Image (cartoon, rainbow, N blue to C red):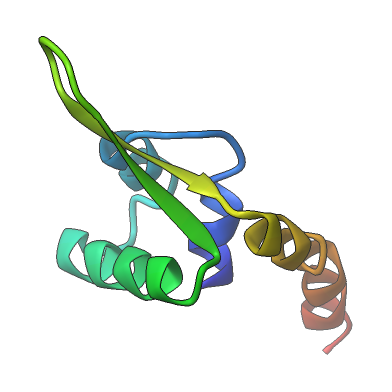
Length: 79
């Protein structure tokens, strides 16, 4: 999940997120995004108009979670 949170560092459409995590299956990515939305770490915004689209962004709680990524990376390297 942290990989996906890290991939949403700016408001992004689904295909942009998928391009940042190419080794994640599309179904798995969609399922994980839905979990992150339910956990209130990610915000899903529907844009209406001539060309409607959906955009994902980090919630304030998601931004806080993103701050621990460097710490987890360091721990992983030290192991």
